[in-house]
Length: 486
Ligand code: GLN
Image (cartoon, rainbow, N blue to C red):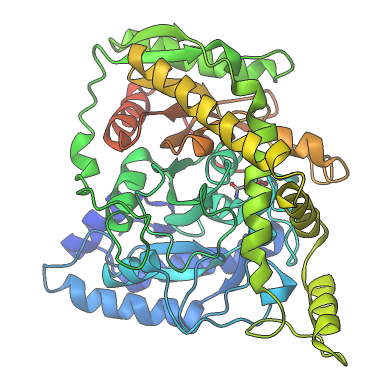
């Protein structure tokens, strides 16, 4: 039996589980041991679910004997603490939900449960998924397993760090403006943000509903494909969720990218980005060419407006979504003489600084007299950005860009300068504004040994092509993942 089962990929573990060479209980135990050993250094989890995980593993072992076990049976996963989990505290990294225990499961949690997955715990994030570094968590920042003086990225920093540090084999994140792809890039793992509507958002605590999307983190493209297949597909409880059939993504992994046209947008290779990031992504494009793909220049002229448009649309929607935290129905309540004081005190005490900033920005953008100038205008810009992509995809099948302009930055480095923090999302947010699928895969290291990610973007519902291209890059073998520092 191999040692340190927590280091296996999902595909490897699944094969061994089916052959009876390892048990789900052993696998869960190794992950939980790793969590116990490393969490004091990483803080990737808000809640560790040891007891539940061992029970699920036990049940998975029974199912595995039946030979009809689904793909994820017995696989230990981390779940971002933004997903409602029945009977398990769900905080969204906020004091306002510090003791909230949902009476129901999010659709994707329910699907993973039905598939026999084992939940080792709820992972850390920026409060209400607002941030790019997981420093905006009421439960403390998550540290980067490659260098614990640096951030793990955000908002799904806990989910990315947990997979990178082998605390679980895969995890769930959400991505509103880059929250899966940027932490994946900073931690050196694969992160997939599917097409808007590909996966149900029912039971996912809402940040910006027209941008939020669910997706997996994994150690390989194949593993991400395996998880997404279980997550995706129609859900009567989310009317925005697509009824389109879900392909067997794993079957798309043929290794063949001959003739694939790869668009390289000049607006995504800008001055001021870390030179090693540009170098690694350009080297990856060369690898694709050596595999028979064709690089073509494309242009997306409205890219420069994306951050401004995003921070209007996202905050406007957030200000409406977060109105429900009023101290009346659930979560924190600070009692007061009258209900207006109760709202005020509860929200003042319950929300952190960044969340308050966003509620104020969003409320302003939506207020009478400013609506046309800000909110409406940002929606028009959003359309222009979507058209940029549509035009680009007339000339290419996929677009390749960096994920973030830099590798993981130091803790505290950007906390006092929100605008610099917002710039971390410059290459990812347009993808959300246009509703497209985008994946981050590791493609290099900088001179400090920090991971660099490349982003593959496709037209709506082109997840198979993205997975195929990502997997082909991994197979080419020119990039070798390095172990984490901790
Ligand atoms: N960093 C971006 C923000 O703060 C994106 C976050 C996300 O995708 N949830 O809004």
